[in-house]
Image (cartoon, rainbow, N blue to C red):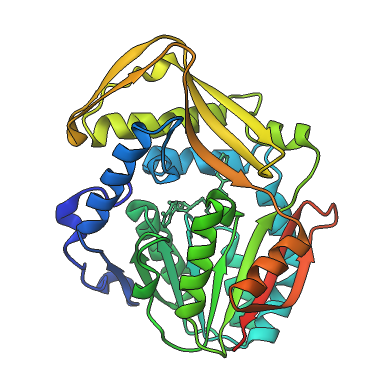
Amino acid sequence: MTPALDKRRLLRASPPDKRLGRCVQVHLDAADWAAARDAETAAGLTATPKVLSPVWFYDERGSDLFDEITRLEEYYPTRAERAILAAHSGDIARLTGASTLVELGSGTSDKTRLLIEAMLAAGHLDRFVPFDVSEETLRAAASSLAVEYGISVRAVVGDFHRHLGRIPRVGRRVIAFLGGTIGNFDPAQRQGFLGDLRGSMGDEEWFLLGADLVKEPARLVAAYDDARGVTAEFNRNALRVLNRELEADFDVDALEHVARWNATESWIEMWLRSSRGQRVRVGGLDLNVDIAEGEEIRTEISAKFTTRGIADELQRSGFAVEASWTDPAGDFLLVLARPYR
Ligand code: SAH
Ligand code: AVI
């Protein structure tokens, strides 16, 4: 199942999974999300240049490919963030004293185990609330974490840009947004997201943000254009998902992966370049899309930050940085912030 794409499933909430002895509840969201996503896709495919939302990457295969990316030699962010969490999860548990850990864009919640274990050791953690648009990955992670740690897990299927308000406000929360996923938002989305998040948080709660830092362009490009071609396949998979879910007929094999550093915007861009002209029918959108030979579709941006830039953006959105850490090489940043009035 792709990112909560089946409208019927969006309409119901599944009951707690009693077999686990703990509450694994998936709150599914309203069908209007699919309509908004489709409208955004139609607008993106008729824009110049053509753009797509990264939401199309994460069907089951895309989530597996992302998992493979995190283990690539060239893809340093996951290893760097894991090193920070290994060194500082105890500090985070102590500073926050939080009883609820929320994780946005949780995926497999792999690195999050370090936080969960530190928060359990500190004796405060009651529940974990993973939030993701990809239902299958969310369900699998929620079930195994509930069984493994014996904590209550309330998983929420939702979209960062629409459904933050559906996250339960229970206990004293630390809201983690790891992996540098904030870099996949454009500046307006980032501002909207931080404002929504701040508006949904109480003064005693915490925001833990992982962000990738600016570095030499060659390393950045290699991280998004690995030698084995895993990222290329991850990129093309977005259009395989579109073909399946929106009854489209993109010739995916004629689309070449391109990753480039945009120094002006301070972000990596991923594109798919068509090696031939193609007229694509997108039945689900009742749309024909003409793609010229050599034309590129932008599928993702991944912004890279400075420590100062992140602190300023957080400040402008109503958060004050309480602590921040990098890995020993200074590749990745983890920031612990709290709302100010
Ligand atoms: N946090 C994990 C996974 C990062 S991959 C890590 O650090 O490794 C990005 C995750 O964000 C995926 O699990 C994907 O399904 C989710 N995601 C992408 N777009 C989303 C959206 N619009 N709303 C909610 N989740 C989204
Ligand atoms: C999820 N996100 C932080 C990843 C990134 O690095 O921007 C997605 C990704 N795209 C290509 N490789 C990894």
